[in-house]
Image (cartoon, rainbow, N blue to C red; front, side, top):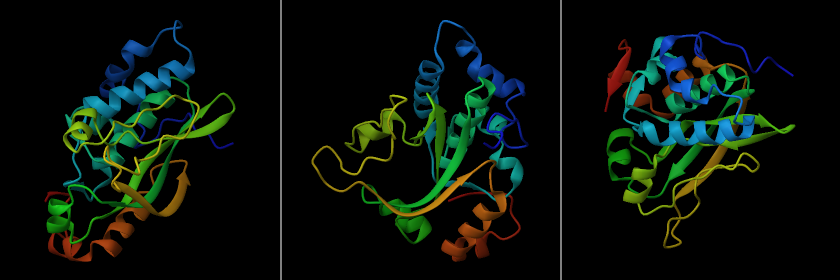
Length: 212
């Protein structure tokens, strides 16, 4: 197995910012599974989901950078969760995919020209001898606003995006699985964005961060 506990440039869990996030979980009274579940909920709900702030620089994808903000998109929140898990000696890695959003897509289509989001970031967590998926992107308040049940995680089963809203309408659809990575694949992420959002990347070429 790769070293899925290592600190890296992106999973910089030795920083004060990340250590401050996990301080309440540094206790022997919680099992690794309990820590993973509570950390998932903390990252899911304490950072508001924001897909409209995009970074084109490596620094923008550091866990410590997200830890110091109040929001983040799926990649930001997944990277932060992985760093926190690794800091608590729970193996974790990033998993990327392409997804299609079917609810509240007007602004997405206006800004991105499509309701397909890529690369979408989620987390693989190693618990009790197996890998399970967790998607901490959509905070509870946003789910309630979109009339979608918040995505829960029990540490035993994959926790993917909700397929349907509370009325049974299609919510999220997975289009393509890019697989998992032992560290943040920055070049892959950048090239993926350039391929799928060519107009945006051309307009903002040379900038390190943009807000759509």
